[in-house]
Length: 231
Image: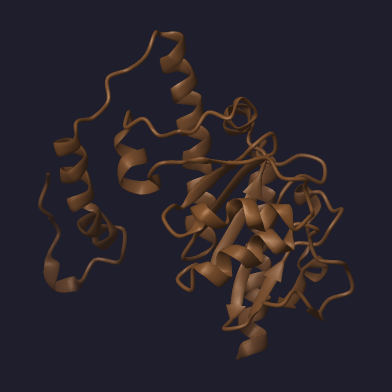
């Protein structure tokens, strides 16, 4: 059963990689993706492979100490960044790092996405801070993101790209998509001279609805009938 699940997990992770490439969030050897496949094991993309050409047998299984447990390739050189998220957040099941153009432009300008402009950002993504610059593939990277992991679900990496995490691969990927869309809209808002933020009361009301939206995103129970309440 474990091997069967791991096969499916490999395929899903590769599908996420292909979507990142197709959306233009990762080109060349950009980006890396990982998935927790056990209490102390993770599946991660290898170094030096285009995400659009990722195949299941290329993926590497590592322990939370970074040691390779399965696979013929070297794990991503950014594995320490992923490990930092998993160590701090036991609730996180997947991590996505990519270089989506609009979000990365904000990272280059070192401008956080913290304005409460969008309903979807307030209720689904939260504030997105910018971590200080760190030399890629060094211990500086996990050290620079450490202060931000616990209280956020997405992060801009100064002059580098973006990092998102979630309960599973799809949530982590969706947050990368929302982050990029948010950055595009914020850029347009700035061109128009600035926007009108949601009030604190409006934000609180949105957050109070999060549990309801999570329920509606799941399967409908038969006894609920064919209708549901509206906001």
